[in-house]
Length: 432
Image 1 (cartoon, rainbow, N blue to C red):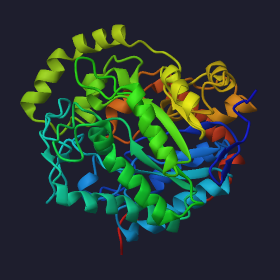
Image 2: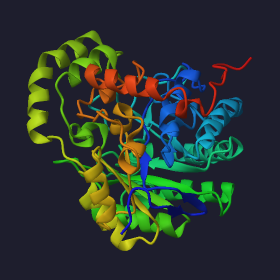
Image 3: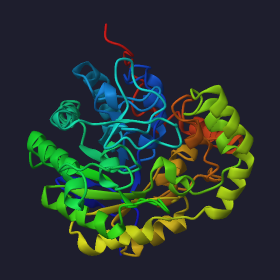
Image 4: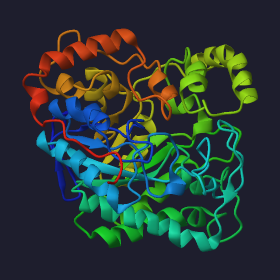
């Protein structure tokens, strides 16, 4: 029976364990998307703890696709040096680093200067309130090319693999979902048409990087869009099989769009709306919109807590359906934070590996604490979700002061040995 410390083969990449750091929007890059020392320091203790695989926060593949503040990018060649420093940090501790490639689509507060917010169709995004422009048919080849060029930069930077982000209601996910894709051309309508852009990206990226460079894909197991035309789990499984046929090496299963809240980030929500509006992604909204959200926030938070209470492994059942039909590894993210829950999920055979994001923010030594030498009084994520509520404006950190204090004490205690594996590198935040 596999355990969190059992190696796993993902394409040509042998990973030393089965508990991974899933992608997180770090809000620690420079304003224009360059890797900074602050970004590297976020991952340094995770590498020190022997985390087998880390997926970067979503890297924007084009200026148009930049969806958040201080988001790292992979859209230009002059960002390769910073990305290479990130890869060297990971490799200094034996960690594999996978670059997550993404375009935000309609899920952004405002467009980059000179750009417009785009999607499959002009369906308004309710969280941000923006109405996107549909991508024109003649723009789609350039969109695919942005992923291809980004993939080439991941190889040049010494990354160990890449992950195409087709989950969470970002642009590729928007094309898959009938609610957000109401096109009447050959990229809308049937599942085959709605999946066409993702499959175009997959095929072109595989051709660019060759057969031996690992490609992972992040997908929803469920769109979690009640009363809207969602992509069903059975449809998503069909898409995963097509991706496997085109050369995908692993699938990571998550859930939801931004408008699926609170389903996408199940947990505790006290202060979620307040933090999103005052120090998070909604801080740039209009004064009227912010005032309205603050007025209804306490009620919305209480209802959300009743509808979607904290649950460990809340995507496990849908991920298991992918495992049944795919021959490539299936990774599941969704609320994992305890040693028992992680071991049970991996040992159950429902998935090949599990990943976590919020739990690693609370405890960057999570892998070591699950697999080998638990730290006494280790911090355990309480899923307050303040880290999620604060992204794009405030650098990502644990929202719990008690957990943050305990975690930082543990990091300092280890700094003389494990945390000295790689000295802090001076990474330029802009081209000279």
